[in-house]
Amino acid sequence: MRRTRFDTDPCPIARVADLFGDWWTPIVLRDALFGMQRFEDFQKNLDVSRATLSSRLARLVDEGLMERVEYQQNPVRHEYVLTEKGRAASDVLIAMWRYGEDHFWPEREQPPLELAFRESRATVRATVVDEITGRPLDPDELRMQRRGRPS
Amino acid sequence: MRRTRFDTDPCPIARVADLFGDWWTPIVLRDALFGMQRFEDFQKNLDVSRATLSSRLARLVDEGLMERVEYQQNPVRHEYVLTEKGRAASDVLIAMWRYGEDHFWPEREQPPLELAFRESRATVRATVVDEITGRPLDPDELRMQRRGRPS
DNA sequence: CAAGTGGGTTCATTTGTTGAACCCACTGTC
DNA sequence: GACAGTGGGTTCAACAAATGAACCCACTTG
Image (tube, rainbow over all chains, first blue to last red; front, side, top):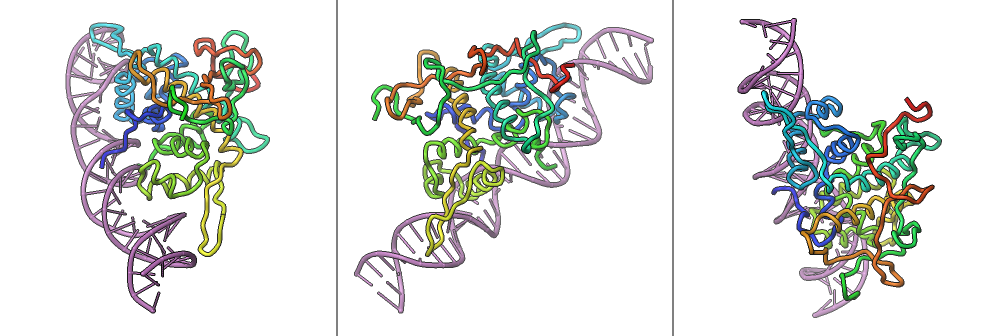
């Protein structure tokens, strides 16, 4: 009766959902992308149970999104550093940010936080587009197909 | 000891994570975006427990991503139709697709499924960009800030 | 030698997921 | 008019996972 896993599913969304499909993982990753690295910092900032945090970080290391790196000896201490794969997850997080700010606040209200460029401090508005045409993607115009031979 | 909720969190990612933060919701939404509407179809296609599916669909209706619409009487039957808010979730799902296909298959392997345009059947490669400049977003160049008065 | 720091693990309680079985309203078939 | 089938659920017992609190350990600093 263990939780259903999708980590070997043929659909990319399913595999990502298997990892992001709990409430803590995306939030831990968010903090990591904004520079957080230490267990204590995550724990204090997120107010998460130490046991839960521990298992989430272990999973992220396991999946190759983070690396557990020793940053001092005597006593030995480690920090969690994002890998390339971990940094690439930012696109998913950024899409979530945009969707959240557009649809999860009551009309005429806005979230107190915004995403901005570090240097200019200008607000970022992200959007998902087709890489080639640069145009937004309408789900009604998309389909899933077998690679190679379109059925 | 109930599960921690983020549906009133000031961070947009947290609110979205609260909804997408389980393994079934993104997958149900994926099928819905590709046109699925009926309970039985979701259940057969996903091989999910009827109880779990039922609660997921109820949550999606509750949050305003879907509407439960009567499509026949005698006997009364309903189907689940995406709202505007539901359709807008496609950007998050598409970003997950891209991240999944780029990072969740072993080197030199590719997922058996691809995202494509319905008409031309050409492969879609999606990317997250800044709406104004059209340029990809590097997480190292971003920050979270309070809206209005940049601290 | 007591308190503090960083990074965890262990534990009991409670909540959520799972698969199987069941229910109900109706239709179509023998 | 009894029965199988369809669509859309609910109920149930068993098990897994999240939670918060307490605990542990290796060191440093006062």
